[in-house]
Length: 184
Image (cartoon, rainbow, N blue to C red):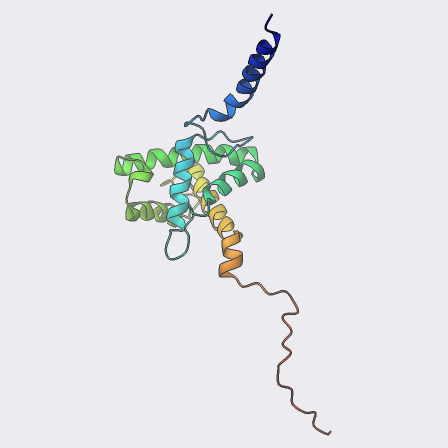
């Protein structure tokens, strides 16, 4: 009987079965785990492209560099109501259809000017009675833009490199010149 070999092989099979799910990567799933919103990789890329259009990379990091699209998705998943999450998903579908209808390609394939023009036209339609864009589409754009800006202004990069934060009451300058007290 080869009991030791059988136990060794059984241990290898159990270990392999435990590690296999972590090695298999489904390319159609989003890279962030969400509880309430079901997003696929293409939709995550759309949010990333929108965030990059809102905060493009210049001499400072852009939205994709700071992974703000993941922040947007996590905030929508954790902090918004069910109705807002449904409006987000519906608006995302409407946005995709709008871009396909206007440019016959996806938002990510459009050039920077077309992307900016699309987002600006949605933003400039502020009248709630206007029927140019559906309310869910405006709500979707508002959530993406608001959370992108929120994520950027609360990011580690922004708080350490752009805003020089100094605790109150401020620094102590031991070499500050002091005038002698004048006699009253």
